[in-house]
Length: 177
Image (cartoon, rainbow, N blue to C red; front, top):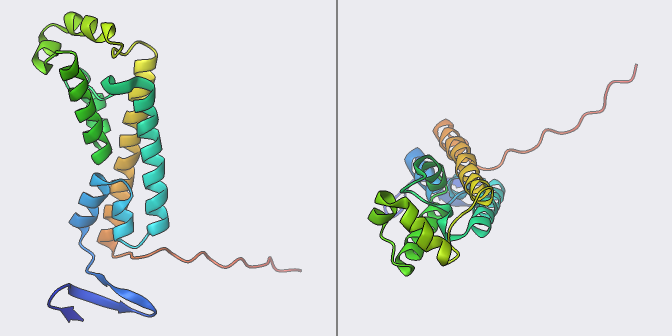
């Protein structure tokens, strides 16, 4: 069925019509807000679980490591994995930028003279120390890598045209003999 406002909609029994399944939208939503790609393809339960799990993992890392957990200037590979959490990584990066500005350290200074930047951050109690910094970055980075798998899952399900949760297989009793 074609609607001028919604485009292609598919009527479902006892359910509201849904928008056409567009894989690129599923991919973008899955990156931007973890779990949103699954919600888009009708897997709301999974989407909520993905959102809660990835959010908890990322923000546990931020709670452990503080503002300097997402450091895109000096920890590029960790930053790439953290940015896979979408809005969480972007917020974490802005928190780091705000923390640097609050102590008067520019990102350029942090790159050119890391010892001076670390000294200023340590004086303000913002510097990460081992092993806390490593663990904090690992939590936030693993959250991003986990979301990468969820992004891929939402994309593949969308490409396959799978919509909604699948019904569980009924349990059968073993044959008595």
